[in-house]
Length: 361
Length: 199
Ligand SMILES: [Zn+2]
Ligand SMILES: [Zn+2]
Image 1 (cartoon, chains in turn purple, cyan):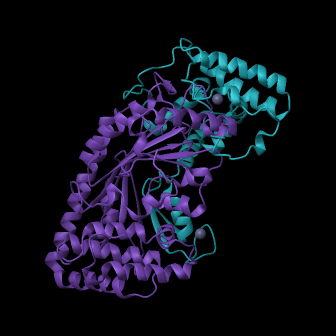
Image 2 (tube, each protein chain N blue to C red):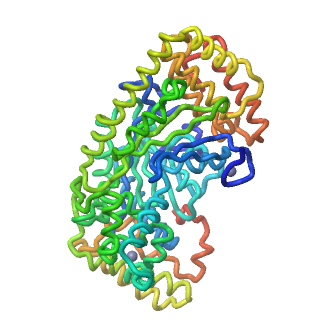
Image 3 (tube, rainbow over the protein chains, first blue to last red):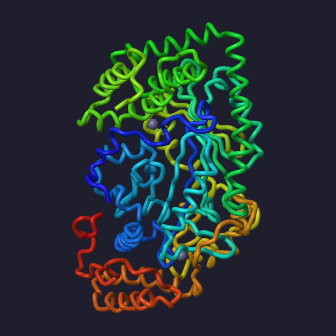
């Protein structure tokens, strides 16, 4: 196990999935797969005593310690972390909000490249997740399948011949698998096609959720596509449904929207993304919503070749590093909301002026 | 516009596209937007309770529903009522104990009742032993809570007996220290170093 466990190793780095590479990475931010597993012979978490939770944590940890990768893994007892550190791991997408806010013994094992993490005592005893940059579900599945086999080792999973892997919530039973592809869709938002595109997908077994602004409101233009069902299909079928059927269609629509914008109003677009970059690199106080909104525009500008001196990896990193807990970890102290606005502006200024260095830290 | 969960201004507008009545827009403050967005799945509780409500309205009379609500899992003790309200089951045995009650719900959510994916390398041969383990853990906790330490220690021995035998179907690889270290001193609640587990 890697020392120290004060998260300082993570603070300066940024995960594999933020490097902005991989297939379709101009539109697809990341491909994530998670598996839900429970140990046989124990109740599900909500019915566990603290004694049960400790035993589960210990059994899983003993299993992980036997893995050859253990020496590089950072194993964190989530219940001993401060609120800022928990929030930091949530922003980094290494733990879920659920486990951050839960009670009792719980932990997360994180690999050094931040490609995978194993949460212990979340809603299920085990939540394994793998995250890759770009649209890369096949290799993400190969990796998580191997990790699942290794973690299982001598442990006995709760499994039913008919219902598959048994989970606390019946929405996860069967494969216990959730595929989530994170998409950046500013073209569909600007051309106001987004609702239409998603409405046409209502009948398909996928869930699309997004975060967007209204009128002049702030937006990040990010949308997440996931499988809705987990029982009755093989893992490969679920991956195909999301990664080969739904996501490519959305990518296609987004490309068409971007082409349309470039043809009809390249000057307007150039003006818009340049102003966004200008605000981000010169503001003295800025909120995280506003930052998201302008970073989204800059990201579009970079991907369309309208801005050529900023790297996508830098933008991706800034999305994460300007969030509240990250700012506080980077600055090494607690910050009030208005302090954060100032520090965030400083941080952006530092990394975007002169086009910004590729290596942000 | 105000956040629909508190009095702060709504700066985030989230579309939920899977609502049965078509897309729904949520207006939220930064805090509540984070809470909603960072939950991995779109409100599974709502999915479960919504599907259940629909199904119960269709098939059951009030009398039948009252009876179903009282039904409890003999292993973990969860009642169907509790499940219906939280959307979370209490233990793996619930899929067996409530099988017929869960069937319409699973069909509603997944449109299937048969797992076709991956299987673990080893499956438990004897399900009864797992059910017994869950009951014993619950009994031990109750014994500790009511300060019946002798009883608790007997239960602990039984748990170790089931777990300790690799040929026994309830076998779970013993960790570095087995169940023997269960805190029976009477103040399990105040045990120091909650997460450290004294390691
Ligand atoms: Zn609110
Ligand atoms: Zn039960």
